[in-house]
Structure formats: structure tokens, C-alpha cells
Length: 148
Image 1 (cartoon, rainbow, N blue to C red):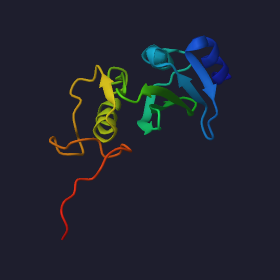
Image 2: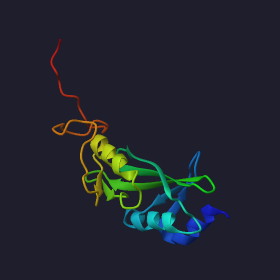
Image 3: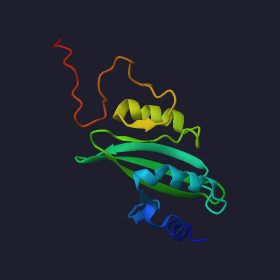
């Protein structure tokens, strides 16, 4: 089975194949993201039932949510990328589909400020609750602790 062709045919205008150096990579429209991932997981043909990881990357004009999914039966891995608004980076939570998304979304929220819509209990997990800002953002400035 050519799973790349199957994905492109299944999702038509919802995904675009982009260059990936190591894994097949698909750009997904934000508004289609949750339905695409749900189908990738539940499809008896594709069966991407394992969320390897998720993260975010900051570019000058936008954020990008990045996901790696795996079909455990045939060890196929794909990467999904979703462009997010720079001023209000948010995307649908995958916690209802993948239990592993819970902590990974919390970490990405904490460090990058990505809001995961529908995540119950989204909170800081690495920085203190009263921490201001998101330390992996390009605009984050370390507070001056005074000279020692």
C-alpha cells in the first residue's frame, strides 16, 4: 500500500505533501486538523494509532504545530504540520484521541504558549504557576535578577 497516495486521495484539499527529510510530511489546514487526525487514527487502512510526539516551532510570521504519528503494525511514521496565528496560537487538543497528548500539550503550552482548545486542565507543568511569559518564545526576555 502506498500510504502517502492514500492519505492524499482520502483528504484531497485538506492536506498537502511537503518536503520532509526523514518522514513523509503533510501540511494540514488548521480548520481540518482534528477531522484529519481522527480519520488517520480510526481508518482501518491507515491506523495511525500512536502519537509519538508533538511540539511547536516559532517563525517570524507564525507558529507551527508539529505532530509525529505512527502506524504500529507496519512501523510507518508521518509528520503533520499546521500553521498557527502568531498573535493567538491555538489548535484543537488531541487529548480525546491520544492519552499521550495530555502532558505534551501542557509542555508546549507552558514553554511556547500554544493554546490547545478543548484540553481540560491545560496548565503549566515545568514553570511555576506564577511564571510570566513562555520561555521558548523568541520575544521572551529573562528577568534581570540583579548583579552578583
